[in-house]
Length: 143
Image 1 (cartoon, helix red, strand yellow):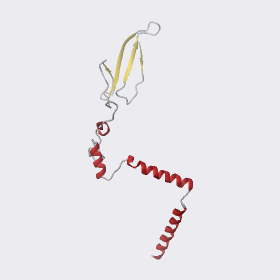
Image 2 (tube, one colour; image 1 turned 135 degrees about the horizontal axis):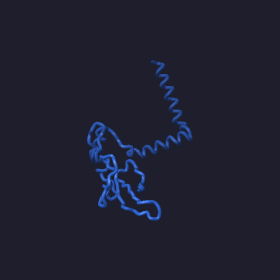
Image 3 (cartoon, rainbow, N blue to C red; image 1 turned 180 degrees about the vertical axis):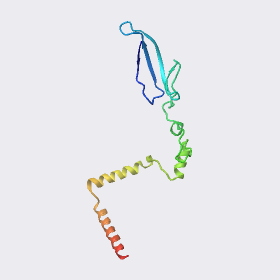
Image 4 (cartoon, rainbow, N blue to C red; image 1 turned 45 degrees about the vertical axis):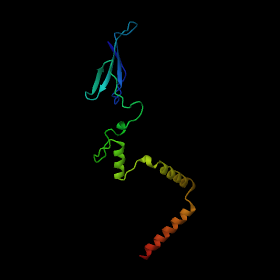
């Protein structure tokens, strides 16, 4: 008896692997049965499933729910952050911010850096920097 199977993709626990069992090779090959399998994380092996089995969907109607995003989230100090409100309050209490909060600022700074490296420093800025450095050196000498 020959067994044909699709490769087992590690990490895809909800995907089924179909197996076809053939009696023999050649023209008289017949399919005996079609069985479905899924990877069971607890048993660490493939388990046969019935025809009525449906995978559990993580997304409801294509929308991302708050439970999916914040479900079992915890801060490094153990504070539960399982809702959007708690996450926002925790960030505010600890003086933290998300990277997305600074997209406009980062874009402006990126443009300034590109301008500096392509065109060089502005002559007024360069003049002020030289003047400030000379002033600081003179102040050090007086001490």
